[in-house]
Length: 337
Image (cartoon, rainbow, N blue to C red; front, side):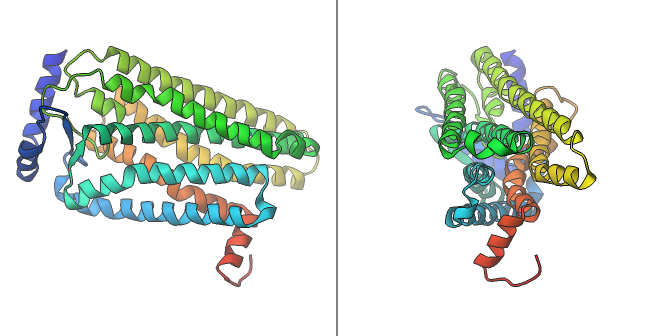
Protein backbone atom coordinates (compact mmCIF):
# COMPACT_ATOMS: atom_id res chain seq x y z
CA UNK A 1 0.00 0.00 0.00
CA UNK A 2 2.70 2.48 0.99
CA UNK A 3 4.77 1.49 -2.05
CA UNK A 4 1.80 2.36 -4.29
CA UNK A 5 1.54 5.84 -2.78
CA UNK A 6 5.28 6.38 -3.16
CA UNK A 7 4.98 5.47 -6.83
CA UNK A 8 2.00 7.84 -7.19
CA UNK A 9 3.93 10.69 -5.53
CA UNK A 10 6.94 10.07 -7.80
CA UNK A 11 4.78 10.18 -10.94
CA UNK A 12 2.82 13.18 -9.67
CA UNK A 13 5.93 15.18 -8.74
CA UNK A 14 7.71 14.27 -11.97
CA UNK A 15 4.76 15.67 -13.96
CA UNK A 16 5.06 19.12 -12.40
CA UNK A 17 6.44 22.07 -14.31
CA UNK A 18 10.06 23.09 -13.71
CA UNK A 19 9.27 26.29 -11.72
CA UNK A 20 7.14 24.26 -9.33
CA UNK A 21 9.84 21.61 -9.00
CA UNK A 22 12.41 24.29 -8.13
CA UNK A 23 10.22 25.75 -5.41
CA UNK A 24 9.37 22.27 -4.16
CA UNK A 25 13.00 21.27 -3.81
CA UNK A 26 13.65 24.31 -1.64
CA UNK A 27 10.60 24.06 0.62
CA UNK A 28 9.10 20.61 1.00
CA UNK A 29 11.39 18.64 3.31
CA UNK A 30 11.62 19.78 6.94
CA UNK A 31 13.14 17.83 9.80
CA UNK A 32 11.24 19.45 12.65
CA UNK A 33 7.75 19.97 11.29
CA UNK A 34 6.77 19.29 7.68
CA UNK A 35 5.47 22.07 5.48
CA UNK A 36 3.05 21.14 2.74
CA UNK A 37 3.30 22.18 -0.90
CA UNK A 38 -0.05 23.11 -2.47
CA UNK A 39 0.00 22.46 -6.22
CA UNK A 40 -3.11 24.49 -7.01
CA UNK A 41 -4.87 23.02 -10.05
CA UNK A 42 -2.76 20.01 -11.12
CA UNK A 43 -2.15 19.87 -14.86
CA UNK A 44 -3.27 23.46 -15.41
CA UNK A 45 -0.25 25.27 -13.95
CA UNK A 46 0.21 27.46 -17.03
CA UNK A 47 -3.33 28.87 -16.88
CA UNK A 48 -3.84 29.08 -13.13
CA UNK A 49 -3.76 32.88 -13.09
CA UNK A 50 -6.76 32.93 -15.45
CA UNK A 51 -8.60 30.43 -13.26
CA UNK A 52 -7.94 32.69 -10.27
CA UNK A 53 -9.94 35.58 -11.78
CA UNK A 54 -13.43 34.02 -11.50
CA UNK A 55 -12.50 32.64 -8.08
CA UNK A 56 -11.54 36.15 -6.98
CA UNK A 57 -14.87 37.49 -8.28
CA UNK A 58 -16.75 34.78 -6.35
CA UNK A 59 -14.87 35.64 -3.16
CA UNK A 60 -15.58 39.36 -3.50
CA UNK A 61 -19.26 38.61 -4.14
CA UNK A 62 -19.32 36.39 -1.05
CA UNK A 63 -17.78 39.13 1.10
CA UNK A 64 -20.00 41.93 -0.20
CA UNK A 65 -23.21 39.90 -0.27
CA UNK A 66 -22.94 38.28 3.15
CA UNK A 67 -21.78 41.45 4.90
CA UNK A 68 -24.75 43.25 3.32
CA UNK A 69 -27.18 40.58 4.52
CA UNK A 70 -25.73 40.63 8.06
CA UNK A 71 -25.83 44.44 8.20
CA UNK A 72 -29.39 44.55 6.86
CA UNK A 73 -30.73 42.03 9.37
CA UNK A 74 -28.76 43.55 12.26
CA UNK A 75 -30.00 47.10 11.67
CA UNK A 76 -33.67 46.33 10.91
CA UNK A 77 -35.68 45.15 13.98
CA UNK A 78 -38.52 44.00 11.71
CA UNK A 79 -36.18 41.32 10.34
CA UNK A 80 -35.44 39.84 13.77
CA UNK A 81 -37.63 36.84 12.96
CA UNK A 82 -36.66 33.14 12.84
CA UNK A 83 -36.22 32.98 9.06
CA UNK A 84 -33.90 35.99 8.95
CA UNK A 85 -31.99 35.06 12.10
CA UNK A 86 -31.18 31.69 10.53
CA UNK A 87 -30.20 33.53 7.34
CA UNK A 88 -27.84 35.70 9.41
CA UNK A 89 -26.25 32.51 10.81
CA UNK A 90 -25.86 31.20 7.27
CA UNK A 91 -24.20 34.43 6.12
CA UNK A 92 -21.77 34.40 9.05
CA UNK A 93 -20.80 30.80 8.33
CA UNK A 94 -20.39 31.57 4.62
CA UNK A 95 -18.03 34.44 5.43
CA UNK A 96 -15.80 32.15 7.50
CA UNK A 97 -15.99 29.33 4.96
CA UNK A 98 -15.03 31.51 2.00
CA UNK A 99 -12.31 33.34 3.94
CA UNK A 100 -10.81 30.03 5.11
CA UNK A 101 -10.35 28.93 1.51
CA UNK A 102 -10.06 31.81 -0.94
CA UNK A 103 -7.05 33.86 0.32
CA UNK A 104 -4.59 30.96 0.29
CA UNK A 105 -6.04 29.49 -2.91
CA UNK A 106 -5.67 32.83 -4.70
CA UNK A 107 -2.15 33.24 -3.32
CA UNK A 108 -1.21 29.83 -4.75
CA UNK A 109 -2.74 30.56 -8.15
CA UNK A 110 -1.66 34.18 -8.55
CA UNK A 111 1.70 34.64 -6.78
CA UNK A 112 2.82 30.98 -6.50
CA UNK A 113 2.80 30.99 -2.68
CA UNK A 114 2.62 27.20 -2.67
CA UNK A 115 4.07 26.47 0.76
CA UNK A 116 1.84 26.21 3.81
CA UNK A 117 2.94 25.32 7.34
CA UNK A 118 1.86 22.04 8.88
CA UNK A 119 -0.10 23.64 11.74
CA UNK A 120 -1.63 26.29 9.47
CA UNK A 121 -2.72 23.54 7.09
CA UNK A 122 -4.46 21.63 9.90
CA UNK A 123 -6.18 24.81 11.09
CA UNK A 124 -7.42 25.61 7.58
CA UNK A 125 -8.65 22.04 7.15
CA UNK A 126 -10.53 22.16 10.47
CA UNK A 127 -12.24 25.46 9.66
CA UNK A 128 -13.28 24.32 6.17
CA UNK A 129 -14.81 21.04 7.28
CA UNK A 130 -16.24 22.30 10.58
CA UNK A 131 -18.01 25.26 9.00
CA UNK A 132 -19.25 23.11 6.11
CA UNK A 133 -20.88 20.92 8.77
CA UNK A 134 -22.32 24.02 10.44
CA UNK A 135 -23.78 25.26 7.15
CA UNK A 136 -25.48 21.91 6.67
CA UNK A 137 -26.91 22.18 10.18
CA UNK A 138 -28.25 25.69 9.55
CA UNK A 139 -29.97 24.45 6.36
CA UNK A 140 -31.73 21.83 8.50
CA UNK A 141 -32.81 24.56 10.94
CA UNK A 142 -34.14 26.65 8.05
CA UNK A 143 -36.14 23.65 6.78
CA UNK A 144 -37.59 23.28 10.28
CA UNK A 145 -38.53 26.97 10.25
CA UNK A 146 -40.33 26.59 6.91
CA UNK A 147 -42.17 23.52 8.23
CA UNK A 148 -43.39 25.35 11.35
CA UNK A 149 -44.29 28.49 9.36
CA UNK A 150 -46.43 26.56 6.84
CA UNK A 151 -47.82 23.69 8.91
CA UNK A 152 -48.26 25.54 12.24
CA UNK A 153 -48.46 29.23 11.29
CA UNK A 154 -50.41 30.29 14.41
CA UNK A 155 -47.73 28.88 16.71
CA UNK A 156 -44.67 29.91 14.69
CA UNK A 157 -43.53 32.70 17.00
CA UNK A 158 -44.16 30.67 20.16
CA UNK A 159 -42.37 27.53 18.92
CA UNK A 160 -39.35 29.32 17.41
CA UNK A 161 -38.87 32.15 19.87
CA UNK A 162 -35.40 33.79 20.20
CA UNK A 163 -34.25 31.51 23.02
CA UNK A 164 -34.99 28.38 20.97
CA UNK A 165 -33.23 29.88 17.94
CA UNK A 166 -30.18 30.62 20.09
CA UNK A 167 -30.11 27.03 21.34
CA UNK A 168 -30.39 25.68 17.80
CA UNK A 169 -27.49 27.90 16.72
CA UNK A 170 -25.39 26.73 19.67
CA UNK A 171 -26.19 23.08 18.89
CA UNK A 172 -25.09 23.58 15.25
CA UNK A 173 -21.85 25.23 16.43
CA UNK A 174 -21.04 22.55 19.03
CA UNK A 175 -21.80 19.71 16.61
CA UNK A 176 -19.45 21.14 13.99
CA UNK A 177 -16.63 21.58 16.50
CA UNK A 178 -16.99 18.21 18.26
CA UNK A 179 -17.32 16.15 15.09
CA UNK A 180 -14.46 17.80 13.21
CA UNK A 181 -11.97 18.45 16.03
CA UNK A 182 -10.67 14.84 15.78
CA UNK A 183 -9.57 15.52 12.17
CA UNK A 184 -6.43 17.53 13.06
CA UNK A 185 -5.87 15.48 16.23
CA UNK A 186 -5.82 12.20 14.30
CA UNK A 187 -3.63 13.73 11.59
CA UNK A 188 -1.05 14.61 14.26
CA UNK A 189 -0.54 10.86 14.75
CA UNK A 190 0.49 10.31 11.14
CA UNK A 191 4.05 10.30 9.84
CA UNK A 192 4.98 12.19 6.67
CA UNK A 193 8.31 10.76 5.56
CA UNK A 194 8.45 11.89 1.94
CA UNK A 195 7.60 14.89 -0.28
CA UNK A 196 4.50 16.46 1.23
CA UNK A 197 2.94 17.53 -2.07
CA UNK A 198 -0.80 18.19 -1.89
CA UNK A 199 -2.43 17.98 -5.30
CA UNK A 200 -5.00 20.55 -4.29
CA UNK A 201 -5.56 24.30 -3.93
CA UNK A 202 -6.15 24.10 -0.17
CA UNK A 203 -5.71 21.64 2.70
CA UNK A 204 -8.45 19.10 2.15
CA UNK A 205 -8.68 16.25 4.68
CA UNK A 206 -8.33 13.23 2.40
CA UNK A 207 -5.68 14.94 0.28
CA UNK A 208 -3.52 15.32 3.40
CA UNK A 209 -4.28 11.81 4.71
CA UNK A 210 -3.12 10.26 1.42
CA UNK A 211 0.36 11.76 1.90
CA UNK A 212 1.03 9.77 5.06
CA UNK A 213 3.41 6.82 4.96
CA UNK A 214 1.97 5.40 8.20
CA UNK A 215 -1.30 3.58 8.80
CA UNK A 216 -4.20 5.98 8.13
CA UNK A 217 -7.09 3.52 8.43
CA UNK A 218 -8.59 5.33 11.43
CA UNK A 219 -8.43 8.70 9.66
CA UNK A 220 -10.13 7.33 6.55
CA UNK A 221 -12.82 5.50 8.50
CA UNK A 222 -13.60 8.48 10.74
CA UNK A 223 -13.72 10.89 7.79
CA UNK A 224 -16.15 8.65 5.95
CA UNK A 225 -18.28 8.17 9.09
CA UNK A 226 -18.52 11.92 9.72
CA UNK A 227 -19.43 12.65 6.10
CA UNK A 228 -22.16 10.00 6.06
CA UNK A 229 -23.45 11.03 9.49
CA UNK A 230 -23.64 14.77 8.81
CA UNK A 231 -24.86 14.67 5.21
CA UNK A 232 -27.03 11.58 5.67
CA UNK A 233 -28.91 12.77 8.75
CA UNK A 234 -29.20 16.38 7.55
CA UNK A 235 -30.51 15.45 4.10
CA UNK A 236 -32.95 13.03 5.75
CA UNK A 237 -34.20 15.73 8.13
CA UNK A 238 -34.61 18.23 5.28
CA UNK A 239 -36.39 15.61 3.15
CA UNK A 240 -38.84 14.75 5.95
CA UNK A 241 -39.54 18.46 6.57
CA UNK A 242 -40.33 19.14 2.92
CA UNK A 243 -42.40 15.96 2.60
CA UNK A 244 -44.59 17.20 5.46
CA UNK A 245 -44.69 20.69 3.91
CA UNK A 246 -45.76 19.25 0.54
CA UNK A 247 -48.43 17.16 2.21
CA UNK A 248 -49.81 20.21 4.03
CA UNK A 249 -49.66 22.48 0.96
CA UNK A 250 -51.55 20.02 -1.25
CA UNK A 251 -54.41 20.10 1.25
CA UNK A 252 -54.70 23.89 0.98
CA UNK A 253 -57.63 24.93 -1.26
CA UNK A 254 -56.93 27.52 -3.94
CA UNK A 255 -54.01 27.84 -6.34
CA UNK A 256 -52.93 31.24 -5.05
CA UNK A 257 -52.48 29.99 -1.50
CA UNK A 258 -50.45 27.03 -2.74
CA UNK A 259 -48.28 29.27 -4.88
CA UNK A 260 -47.58 31.55 -1.92
CA UNK A 261 -46.65 28.57 0.27
CA UNK A 262 -44.30 27.16 -2.37
CA UNK A 263 -42.70 30.55 -3.03
CA UNK A 264 -41.71 30.87 0.64
CA UNK A 265 -39.66 27.68 0.23
CA UNK A 266 -38.14 28.55 -3.15
CA UNK A 267 -35.08 30.38 -1.84
CA UNK A 268 -34.27 27.65 0.66
CA UNK A 269 -34.58 24.88 -1.92
CA UNK A 270 -32.20 26.75 -4.27
CA UNK A 271 -29.65 27.14 -1.46
CA UNK A 272 -29.96 23.44 -0.55
CA UNK A 273 -29.30 22.36 -4.14
CA UNK A 274 -26.33 24.74 -4.52
CA UNK A 275 -24.77 23.41 -1.31
CA UNK A 276 -25.43 19.66 -1.40
CA UNK A 277 -25.26 18.70 -5.09
CA UNK A 278 -21.66 19.88 -5.77
CA UNK A 279 -20.57 18.73 -2.30
CA UNK A 280 -21.88 15.19 -2.72
CA UNK A 281 -20.45 14.97 -6.24
CA UNK A 282 -17.05 16.19 -5.04
CA UNK A 283 -17.09 13.70 -2.14
CA UNK A 284 -17.97 10.76 -4.40
CA UNK A 285 -15.41 11.61 -7.08
CA UNK A 286 -12.66 12.04 -4.46
CA UNK A 287 -13.24 8.59 -2.97
CA UNK A 288 -14.63 6.53 -5.84
CA UNK A 289 -14.33 8.49 -9.10
CA UNK A 290 -10.97 7.28 -10.34
CA UNK A 291 -12.00 8.01 -13.94
CA UNK A 292 -12.61 11.71 -13.19
CA UNK A 293 -9.52 13.83 -14.07
CA UNK A 294 -7.83 15.16 -10.95
CA UNK A 295 -7.95 18.79 -12.07
CA UNK A 296 -11.73 18.49 -12.54
CA UNK A 297 -12.10 17.24 -8.98
CA UNK A 298 -9.93 20.06 -7.58
CA UNK A 299 -11.90 22.70 -9.49
CA UNK A 300 -15.22 21.27 -8.28
CA UNK A 301 -13.99 21.05 -4.69
CA UNK A 302 -12.81 24.68 -4.80
CA UNK A 303 -16.01 25.96 -6.41
CA UNK A 304 -18.03 24.02 -3.82
CA UNK A 305 -16.55 26.23 -1.10
CA UNK A 306 -16.94 29.53 -2.98
CA UNK A 307 -20.10 29.27 -5.08
CA UNK A 308 -22.63 28.79 -2.21
CA UNK A 309 -21.27 31.75 -0.16
CA UNK A 310 -21.39 33.92 -3.30
CA UNK A 311 -24.86 32.84 -4.48
CA UNK A 312 -26.73 32.55 -1.17
CA UNK A 313 -27.04 36.33 -0.61
CA UNK A 314 -28.11 36.83 -4.24
CA UNK A 315 -30.74 34.10 -4.00
CA UNK A 316 -32.23 35.47 -0.79
CA UNK A 317 -31.85 39.06 -1.97
CA UNK A 318 -33.83 38.37 -5.13
CA UNK A 319 -36.42 36.01 -3.63
CA UNK A 320 -37.05 37.75 -0.29
CA UNK A 321 -38.96 41.01 -0.66
CA UNK A 322 -38.22 42.31 2.86
CA UNK A 323 -34.46 42.03 2.41
CA UNK A 324 -34.59 43.46 -1.10
CA UNK A 325 -36.58 46.48 0.08
CA UNK A 326 -34.32 47.06 3.06
CA UNK A 327 -31.13 46.85 0.97
CA UNK A 328 -32.52 49.34 -1.53
CA UNK A 329 -33.39 51.73 1.30
CA UNK A 330 -29.93 51.36 2.85
CA UNK A 331 -28.20 52.27 -0.41
CA UNK A 332 -30.81 54.91 -1.15
CA UNK A 333 -31.75 53.36 -4.47
CA UNK A 334 -35.13 54.35 -5.84
CA UNK A 335 -37.02 52.15 -8.16
CA UNK A 336 -39.90 49.82 -8.50
CA UNK A 337 -39.61 46.75 -6.24
